[in-house]
Image (cartoon, rainbow, N blue to C red; front, side, top):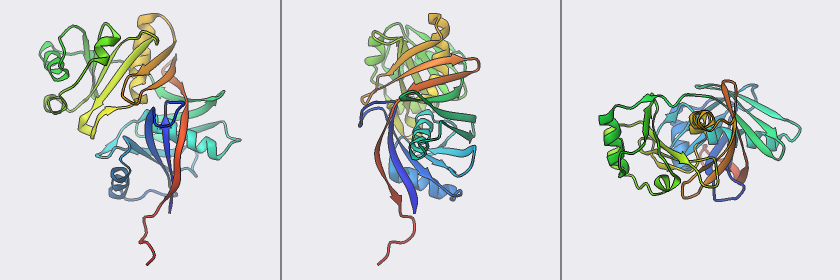
Length: 267
C-alpha cells in the first residue's frame, strides 16, 4: 500500500489552484507503474517521492509522460511532508532539474526554483503561426526556449480572452505555451497551455514562474511581485528573485488522503 495525498496547490481554498497527487514511496517502482498511477489519478501531475531520504528524490508524471520540472506538485509534496512532520521547517529534494526545496514561510509555504530567462526572440513566421493557434492578432513580444513558447501582451484582457485551437498548438510545435501581461490587481497575470502533455490548460504553473518572476521583476524594477494565473480554477502567489533562485510563497489545501492498493484485492 502506498500513502497517497491529493493537494490543491497555490490556493487558500479547496477546488481552486492546481491539484497534485503525492505518493510516498520506500523505493522506486517501475516507470510503467508510475505512469499508470498518474494516468489513473488524472491530476495535471502526480509527484513520487522517496520521503525517507534526505534530500528526497522526487519525480513527476503527467497523465501522459514524465515531466522534467513541476512547481505545483513540488510545493504540494513539501506541504505534505511538512504537515506530517510539524517540527520540520524545510524539505530538500533532488530532481532531474537540480536541487529544489520547500520551507515554511510564516503561515505559508515557500518553494525555491531556478531563475531562468524567457529565451530568445521567436522568428516572425513562428510567432505569426502561434498567434493564429491562439486566435489572436500579432501585437506582442514572443520568445522561445527548449521547453516553452512565451507571449507577452500589453494587457490582462488579452490574456483572459484567449481561446486556443489546441489541435493546432500541438501541430505547430509541441512545446508548452505561456501567455502573460501586466495585471489589474496583481503585478502580472499569466496562463499556461500544455496540450502535448495531456493538459490543455494548466490551472497554476509553478515552474513557469521561474521564467516570469525574473522577467517581470526586471521590467517593473522590483524583486518581490504578486502574480495570478487566470485559469478557470485560478491561483495566486507571491514571487521573489534572490540571486539565481526564485522563491514562490503560496498556500496549499489537503483534499484527500488514503492508500493506493497496487496488490491484488483480497477475495
